[in-house]
Length: 494
Image 1 (cartoon, rainbow, N blue to C red):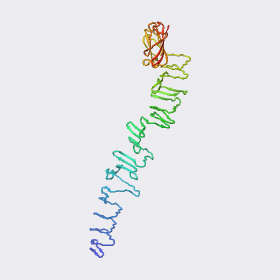
Image 2: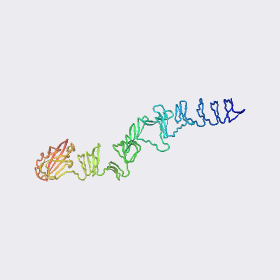
Image 3: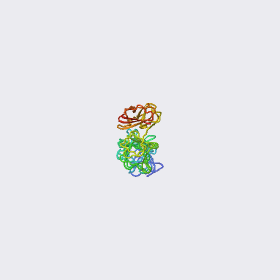
Image 4: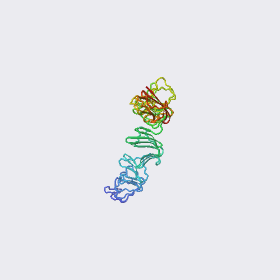
């Protein structure tokens, strides 16, 4: 070592400076300040103060870098070829990256700005997930699972829409701590796991029609619409309380059932006994609005069937054939045979057609028959008598004014043959006032056909009596269709 500017042995003049060519020391060299113009080579160095390096600090083969404070890298940090952290904040990690804090492994991703935090892949979908200040965006599927994609899947596809799928086990949706659970859409389907069988459909059909449907075997069994409820098939219920108007196609009711205001469209079938009870004057009512019938009980527990005011009660068979009609004035019309067994009291009975009785017993009173009291201008020519309107007796009050024939029929559209029966007998009695012997009945016709009459005394009358009332009694025996035996008797009452 060469020393200069020494004042004496072991001392140097600090004002003159110290120039050292080489220093080799085994101890500690302490300097409060100093400047090195060349290279410094040392095995170890300890600096108690700050170290400033204006150039580049290059070091290799460093096992660990332990920094208590902040490490500032102005141009970025690069770790081999796998990790790059740029000075602008971008970072790139090649391979598997694990982020965690502490023993729990919790991961925190912070995004203070509106920029995206993205994870990219090299497949056709590009990025897989992004976080924004408003939430997390996932491209394709998000899996909540401990084993691959076997758990809950949240998926989205631009073509098919969004999916929430439990790939295994079960899926439970609920609000355990109150509040409401809201599912909203214009069309909601409930199907089986294969989506081939429909359980229910809730849909908005139009702006004025919302519809709910329940299915069985892919067929609608219950429809709920603003107009009401429609049930398809048989409905079985233990008890049913209905308030208002209900429309059912088919109802199978077992047990006690209370129904208020039931409107039934179609056929109602009761197997077994049907009972209807009411309190007081409660009644069963049927019919269109304004024209109704009632079934009820009077104060003496007598059954009452009542038609609307001015309307008739009509009894039919075979759905269309009217058999009996009770008019609003009380008149009863029976359109076929009336078979009466036992004692029967009938007042003012009007029977159109044929009445058959094996025997008859009439008590005190009057047995009456309708007749035609003709007060016109006097009979002449061909005269038609309608027995359905005027009965089997005709009286011409005015003297006959010429020769005449007499034809009997049901009416203008009904034949006598159609209202009479084979092997039955009846009598047509004709009273004709007369003042001229030339004015007599020359023929007796049935349904326009002249009959061959067997006259009392053997010959037909050829003249009238010329005074009083001539009476022609024509007994008619029907032997077949439009075939008759006719017996005539001619008398005069003066």
